[in-house]
Length: 468
Image (cartoon, rainbow, N blue to C red; front, side, top):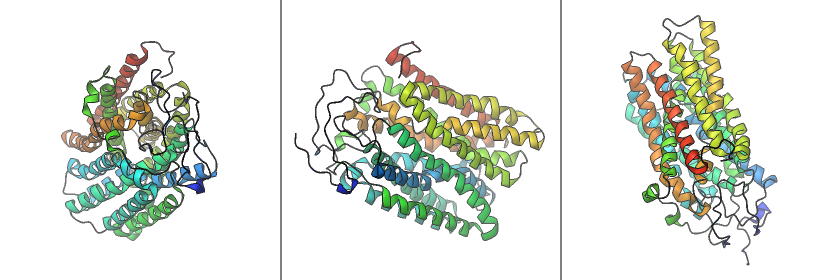
């Protein structure tokens, strides 16, 4: 079969057909599926793995520069999502001090919702234009949102600017970088993606510390501008190095549009997996949003309260990388079940006791326990988002991955919309104490782990030896 030359000759790697079966890809291949070849006109959606009959560089300068570009995009984009606690705490004490926690939380939950719901619809545009245009537009949106944030004074200002504009910018910096990585890596994709995803953790370390250091000295407006300058510098590198490898083609909407009928097909594993992922995303952003305000509520100083978010995100670097390596060897579901159960344990066994004790123990002991929690939860939650795609991918053929992922995430993205406000409402209902919020987080994580275990049982039975 004759193939066209890649539309990105500077990558220096032509796409070659191969008869080899990639059994260690992002999903389990169907044994009954014929080994059909694909033409380059059938360029896959970025929500899909590239076709199995192409070889991948699995490294090289172009591949690792793409990973670096993706890392910069993740640091600038998703790093803000991991910094939500610092901004939420500041606004609750200043511009929006007359609003309850649950109302303020809608600003940040809307950003999460827009980021993930819009992000999954950007696949067809990636197929048509590649990453350059999308990442460029996303960079402008995100930097503009941060510059305008310093001028916001009313609640609706924050909704439009941070909830919608920043959310749209983040969504444009989510799918294209990960899709670009999938053009260069197959066997090592989980590892390469994990490296890029550490950017969101590093951003979650840098941004709260920069914001905390800047606003007392320069004021809120200039603190936001400084963050905008840092993000802009990172996104310059993202725009320089991100590239795709497969030639551009006409996007096929039928392959990535939601199709809710697939929930009724087969053994119900996709529906159960979607419910488990919904619980995971619901619980994930609650500690990220409220850990800083919790520390202040128990009498710890503001400096430590902002640092704890940086500690949590710093620890999540381990959770981004190590589980990806492990998952490729022992199974994506096996790894995810353990990590979700570990998140439930850290909330119930470590955070809950100090949330229940009144008055709290000595400040030194309290700080020690909170640091322990931040490190444990950071490691545990680091893999939550990075293992979503591989887990969904194991439930379908590669060519249907885009449709399965989109259908699932139409529901899952709503968890990010409601989780943070519900957490704020629980704090209000418990007179400013956090034990109810912690119990909810732990129980929902346990439900997520149980759902993943149910999918595993459906697919491979009760055996503990299966790699799945």
